[in-house]
Image 1 (tube, helix red, strand yellow):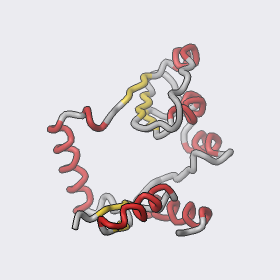
Image 2 (cartoon, one colour):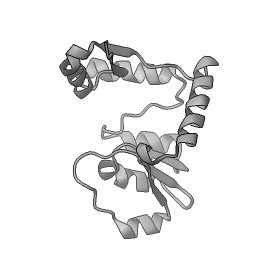
Image 3 (tube, rainbow, N blue to C red):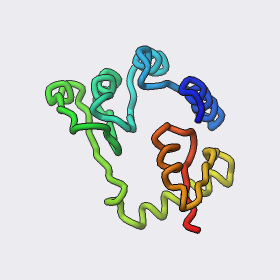
Image 4 (cartoon, rainbow, N blue to C red):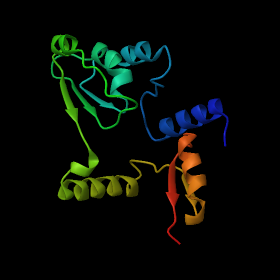
Length: 153
């Protein structure tokens, strides 16, 4: 596996090559300043760790900001109701398994078309044979860059 710092640098390069205007590691101490330097207020925040990041999200929010959370780590976060009300945000929670099939199919079509048009780039793929699912899990747990796939045969 790659050293953590090297992996973070590689991830940054992949994201920038994919066309991101700004790449910020939300776990770094200067993340809020970097984001505010890009834009003092965000209209949409797609959140991967609501409990850890809600404080920062609220500092980037204002009326009509929507924070969408589709993942969380650890225990359920405590919701700072007054801070959410003051920011006047909309919180939306999405569980992929609850998204209607027709919306998933339409989304897949849009992403596939964007990949074909080279408007998006694909991530590196790390394939593992079925009898090495342990290796696949270890790769995923070590935050390997890209997609981890297990072949059925």
